[in-house]
Amino acid sequence: MFNVAVILGAGNGTRMGTDISKMLLEIGGKTVIQRSVEAFTDMPEIDEIIVVCRESDIEKFSELIQDESVTFVIGGATRQQSVMNAVETIDECDYIIIHDGARPLITQKAIINTLDCAMSNGAAATGVKVKDTIKIVDSDMKIVDTPNRNSLISIQTPQIFKFSLYKAALKKAVDANEDYTDDCRLVEKYGADVYTVLGDYENIKITTPEDIPLAESILKMRGDKA
Image (cartoon, rainbow, N blue to C red; front, top):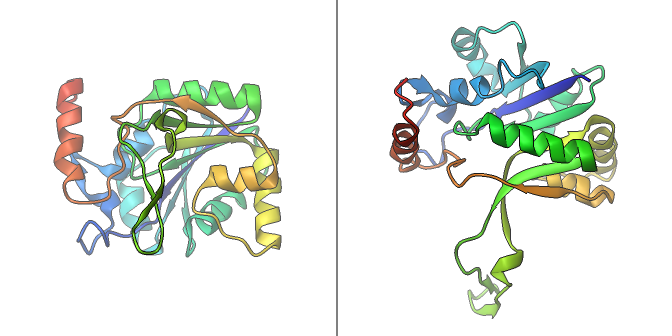
């Protein structure tokens, strides 16, 4: 079996309020992208890692991540296009593991659990149960519905798919001129079932400035000093 992890790190730092990529911000002495990639290295289940990044960041990323199993690909204008750029470099594999580089606190346990589910069902994603009550509103911000919280999952990454299934779903989306911000949705629209695996609330996404101290506090709680 041959599995490829695609780490998406081509986003900008707009919401972070920084001119540099948020992937290059440090959390506990290591950059966000280093922590995200290192979660997948030295895993026997992962044979290759492709890091998708901006062209302007490739030199810096390659300096930070010196592992023979890691290659770099320039990202596209959207998430789907970025994943497609990585897919086009893969000759063949069994499962593709897609992970947001902005989620540096993912654990190998969560990766393995999600991979196991994908191997059984063809497609799987990690996520957590929604804690808050969710409201659906109209264009005037008036509440029009309240979905049952027990049936709501906040989807995270990794999202893992049988490679042949993902390539077919991606081709269908491209042919239909559709562009999805979520890989599960892309596969769902193809008509395939996607299963969820309960993961960790600690698997936060680094998006805004307050996420940095939160991530550092999680690392301290785990006893990670480096």
